[in-house]
Image (cartoon, rainbow, N blue to C red; front, side, top):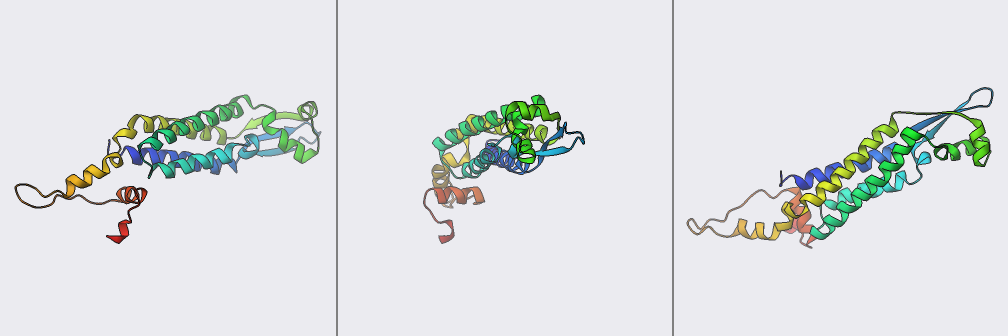
Amino acid sequence: MTARARLIAVVATVLAGALGIISSTQTWLTVVLDDGAKHTLPVAGADAIPVLAPLSLAALALGGALSIVGLVLRYVFGALAVAIGASLGVLTAQVAFARPLSSVASTVTQATGLTGEKAVSDLVLQIAPTPWPFVTLLAWIVLVAAGVFTLATARRWRGSGRRYTTDAATRPDAATGAAASRPHDAIDSWDDLSRGDDPTAR
């Protein structure tokens, strides 16, 4: 489990951020207007929550960076993942369950030209959610869990002891004189790059 901890944290964080970015372009809410014809307006995730796309992109970047950073930044990025996931989780839950008028106001104003809370409120007959805010809420729960998991396991990630592992792996065996070795995987190559070593030069 320890050897896979970094992979689990990175994949979970990247997937949550990627889903958030995709979700920002999808329809989260459908607004029915009280205009006689009862026209409907689709409200995208990015319109319902303006910070959805940038914070999702930040989560995606955090996931990528987790694969190469050292111990201190693992804790920093883990805490940021928790903060981003919790913040977006609260905002997403509000849209999914409470469906506040503010989440559709900009779309209604753009479509009708009406401004002001009362004018928009008088025009909006119904606000119905699609599955997207609920799916995205699950993504933020995963992101928070990934951040907590990172904080709990960061010290035990294999990369934290890479230098000592390499030394031990290449030290000649006292009995046989042979050098012990293990496969050099992609994550090890990232560790080499983070220390300024070029693995392709070997």
